[in-house]
Length: 526
Image (cartoon, rainbow, N blue to C red; front, side, top):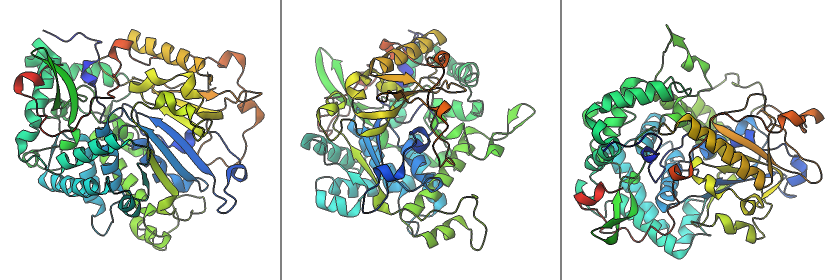
């Protein structure tokens, strides 16, 4: 059997990394008057963002890393995922990003980040970090007081008790509650997924990966992804090989998730790898860069690979993230600017306090009920919806956005399973859903094929201006606030998957994880 093109099975039912480059969310929010939302005591305005399917925290990390380019704001990120393993990965990734620089150097931190985030197999050193951190988090989740004391940026207060129990079980599995590689045989699980996905094309898998890369990803703007690294990831699940290939042999348990399957007429829960085996983790940090020299070409070929660009971008991101736990003087030590001129012409901003951002995790399946609570209705300035969560876009969800707030929807541009008619069909459906929810398309000079951007109608006049750049400090001219009629519905290009290719929500599929290793005959059942 051969998997039909356009089926979307390569994306999997669980997302571990995004299918779009990381965004600075402050650049996506409408301009606000700092005095109008400022707390009377601190004079620092809040930025409330609702994230559906953030998956890997890349947008949150980039926003925090670039916070010094903007006027001070207090960040409140409300994150809703469709599985608790994604919540656990958020917590682990943020704990790593905020790890004390005296305990873990910048290079070690960036390499560990890349392995845990994007590799199916880890080096022993990275696996040891996961076990240690998971053991600590498993102890903190059931003790709210200790959690607030040690992780002041984290809020699990809205999660149900059952969800916290499952979250604790996830961390205990990561910490080695079930010993030995057979608890999560990643090599076998990856190969099983690949065989089921490719079917009769499995023996020609190198040719299939080259076709998907050159005829799809390259044509859609990801030319920096090199054939060698993409083929290696398709074969083994190792996207970032920063050491000798023999060093990667420990299964990455953070990529394990549970799924309800039918076996011999009975429903059972199986642990396995149900994530992406088609596109890879290269898009999030590897195809764009602030340093344009990384994107230069020579003789028509990029001089840097997506892996090298990813390592550079993640290293710089983690360098800036260190400022969230260091005083301003220590920040100069991290950036190596003793006595040097600042890199930006703007006056340097004071290093934000650790408590000036909070990540709130919302209960699974709560998207359609948020508007019923007064604390969420009309609260958020920005709503972000990942391509696997577009089915949740509705008037009820739109009621949580403040008038004039912005909506950003991730499109499926880099989902290689989908053909152009399917991408265009999702584009149209996203536009229809957004308009039904009370949004209008933003007036963009160059509409994006990666994100669809909308603005919620303001009463009495609509506000559809583009998000201000990082250097903007004043109100835009009136012409930027109201687009001409012909620009209100710009063509959005190739966008998203049909209903059958949409990632299904996984609510209710997460009982305690102990003893859920699937037998060999179950693993290939999709």
